[in-house]
Image (cartoon, rainbow, N blue to C red; front, side):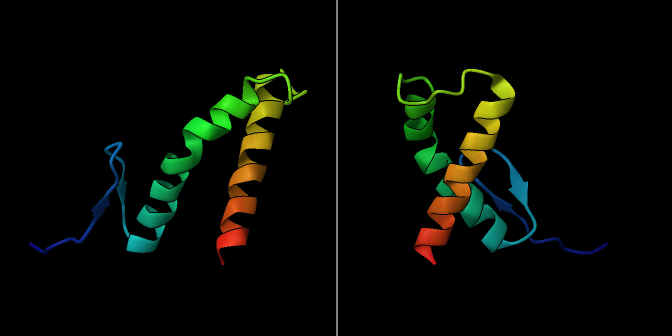
Length: 67
């Protein structure tokens, strides 16, 4: 038997590294604001697939700004 170290975020997801867990936790922190934008008249992409692309772009941009 061996001991396994894992990291759990507030939404119950499990990650193998603290970096992955921290990245996901940062996403959870900004998700409500992203959702507000996606559902506003400022976002011109009403298709779910397009909205996911917009969401992923915003997340990547926020991560880039924090580095």
